[in-house]
Length: 116
Length: 115
Image 1 (cartoon, helix red, strand yellow):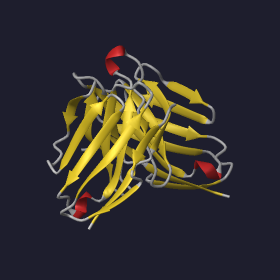
Image 2: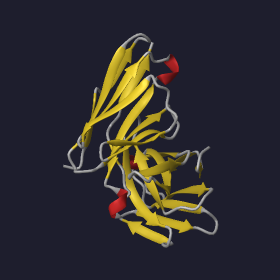
Image 3: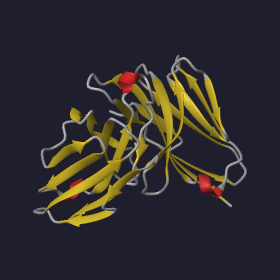
Image 4: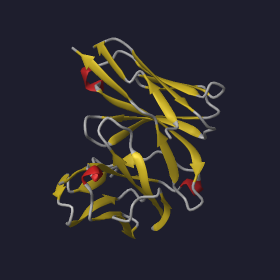
């Protein structure tokens, strides 16, 4: 199984709502990532988890809260978002760099988020 | 700031023609990758070239890397309508002490292949 799945595909939320994005992979990858992508722009890294620990936070506002419950799952909890947070949110995974294996990242299809 | 700048920003060609996209970057890298993204979807890895390699092929794809000029090119030969997508280069020069790697994406080239 070489697939990263993301749910939901689309999400519309108000600025006072709390919602969560989910990502799952069953490739045994130990690094997982959240990216934000605006229209016609490249993906921007938000968070990296390695072995279920937060490895990097790219100065993301606290209204975005990541969680890695186990090695296959990655969540992004959303609270009090702003309209400018509307974007495509991409999840990715890769094998552990420390083993020297595979720098390739495998991406999910994304969740298109609209904040009203 | 963006590590990679790509040109052209947009490219429109006829089916069967070759498409060439260029990527320039600013700092030392371990490797450079190319990804494709169909409209509004996830990215798909195409090819990885390491810093000690100069050229690599995969099917209809040919990638070159010139580390002295900090640039790479992606050539798609005999293009098809299905190649219509955005193409991003991504550099990996950043080792995360906790594991994982940090890709920095270029600005992207939007390729349209017309019948």
